[in-house]
Length: 164
Image (cartoon, rainbow, N blue to C red):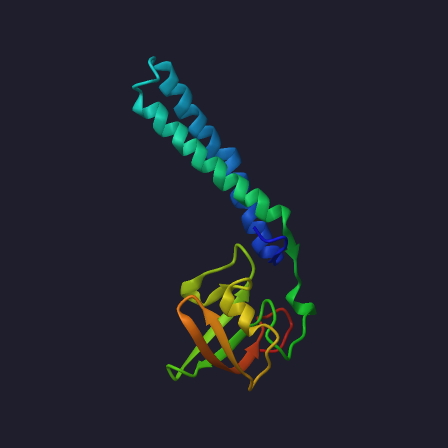
């Protein structure tokens, strides 16, 4: 896990709410399932008991992952970042020079990613390759599928009082 995980307050709050839901609602349900299965007697052949214990282990792993992300979160206010280069929180329009297609990505923190909507993690290889670039620059980014070549067409920001 990375030492620092950039997040906005929105992403942090979303992760914290998910953690609280898992701890306060889902874990008690699993504990009730375990108790009910335990009450049935012989645990060695009790599939319900073993299934509930497995669910508990998976849920604990997810809870620990969320705790770790929150512990390493660094809250970033995109409105305080430069507006003339690709930075956390911006939406960047690029031209894929190999496919001759325009694409748009918003660089977001943990908890806000939505790949279908073009919201990519700022820690992803693609976002890391775009960071710091300015309009008109070309960049070659190494991604798992190979090298992708882009030209930066536009850099915009949401309605935090920034330009668009």
